[in-house]
Image (tube, rainbow, N blue to C red; front, side, top):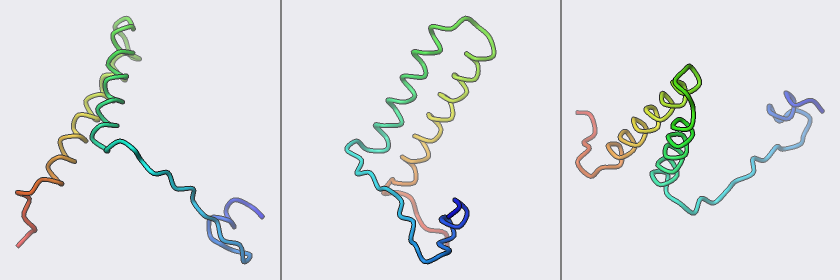
Length: 79
């Protein structure tokens, strides 16, 4: 059975995704990942690879702020 058939559940078999129970919060995992990227970037000379890592760090920081905002108590539904 091809991967496409498995993804579409064709042929009578069910493809199940393996679930992982996270032990750390999304915020903690995101912060740790951003910190690892920062450390990697400091070891590199200025250039494209370093800039790419720092861009990923900025995106992680934005994602953390968005997650904090979305999960805040002050967020109101649209009226």
